[in-house]
Length: 586
Image (tube, rainbow, N blue to C red; front, top):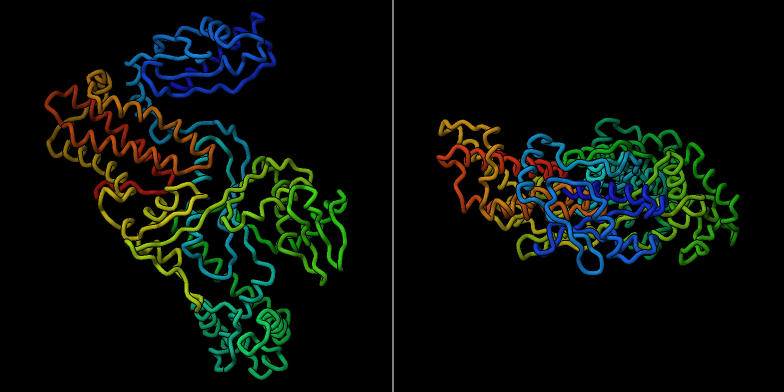
């Protein structure tokens, strides 16, 4: 109905432009809102107030002209002016039944739109360093990012989902060295493990598998590994200097070729694990973009050359700096260190240049909330590359704290062990994990109650919504068990029999689904869709408890069956966008 009213107003605007009342250059965004007070009609628009200044006309006078120019429509029973110039629309109550036929006809496509008009959008999310398994902290970003991408696609954007693989740099060298040292232990060598190494059991697992596959191919004597190394932190030394020296020793003893082979073993094993984990969590990507690619194809050099040509780089203390403070950052940033190595930020600049060069009209980066301070420098880089910084949208995701009832769950230990996303999924299931993760605004901290997520009670929100779907399926099974025939057409012809307050409320809520979907997508707020689904489920459960559906009157029975099947379809559509299943029995 909102779309219909918008089209009526667009036709009225065209008529006023045609007769010279309005200038042809006026092209406002038309806002249509549902009224909160039934005495003000069903929908209201502030169009006359928006146009009053450019039209050089009082809002109420302009509203009168707009109303006079509105085409006739049988579903609009009255249009009136309220307050300073609001235009209120009263809708024929019988028009509310049209939503059932619309849902029945469109099915899974109900609610979808082309608001995005095919605009190319890249959504980059998770992008955790491939130095270990995904943990529960990554899960919220994974669920949020995938739902945001799916919502945008549902309203007509051309969405490209991407994972940025940080497969270059020091952390990957620390990982490779950590695996090699554990591998040496598998070979029988005895040597201390760096205090700054990766200590998780997954490192031992990769080392064990490597030894099983390769035997002693990568073995080197412990005395050669430890010879003349600086002291580690437990011995009074510097852990950073020690791990860097250990990385250099690893590369020297293995040589370039064997080191690369060993490096790849760790990277590919963990990356495959991440891919599998995310796929099982309902998250898939069009592209896994390698940071090393930027190094190998010269993209980092090209990005810095662009900044240099624009006068944005300078030399200081042997390093190359980006003058980001002149573009809104709090201070300038190093892009090339004194030793000639690129910083992580240099790679990030090149990556965003690559995104721009690939023609994305909107770039959406989804980061952990601890990266908030990183936003200004990336925006500065966008400006320095000659792009409109508005093309970049950074969405932040807060961490989630796990509880089991009232007891807080320990997230990690000093040994490097932590609760993985896989463990969470195994405990509560994909549906509950995804639903809970996007139930609140992404920037809000959330408490994730594992006990609640696995409960089969109305207090569990995902169970409550899924149960509404299952209840409709149960009614349809009872229909078959009682050998009753459902006549869809008869039900459509008798929708006027749906006169109960519960039915009127459900019809109104069903008609709001396209609006709820569009609002959730354009605001990057999946929780709005969840709020809608919970409201629809609540209204259905109330209706279910108050009325019989399989009544003797075939006309009323089929009308009610058409209504609850429309509810079932909308629940399926909404849950599908969340990648949450719709069980037929619970």
